[in-house]
Length: 238
Image (tube, rainbow, N blue to C red; front, side):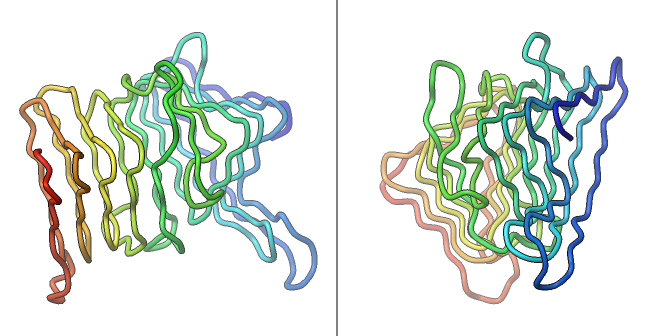
């Protein structure tokens, strides 16, 4: 999409699915979904879903969002937002919404570790990290209003790391090989749960707090039951 808008009103949903092409050894940047030049994809209260598979050769992401917006800055939508791709690239882009955000692989697992990292600018979270292995290049506006957060999916074996303090109004689910909790995680919604499910280890750094408002907090290491996995709480309260 170039300088385009895709919008659903009312409870309508937006579902965009793309698969990149390309011949082996010829051409690059064969993205599954490519949004650029002030494109906007938004819904009012329905779900918004981008599902992308990268094509052949270098620079071929499943989803690439450049100088574009997911959601509506003037009236953020309440529907869930799902970004499903093995490789996602952002640059100068924005996300607005109060629904749950899911970033998960298209395949069984991400090909590389994924880091939830960035810096808070007022109420907004400005992503940082390695392109394609984080949400670097994306600003999540009014972070605390998110209705949920899921990173990875059951069966994901790539590591997941949380590197920035995150407080949202909904459940939090982390699925990875090893899960490293290096910053506070908080769910402010009544009875909303926090789940960290790792096929390997779960490590919570010293000084890090993980807190709910009456919901369950579950740490599940060695979820593949192969006997290799532990939970390490390094002098924390939680």
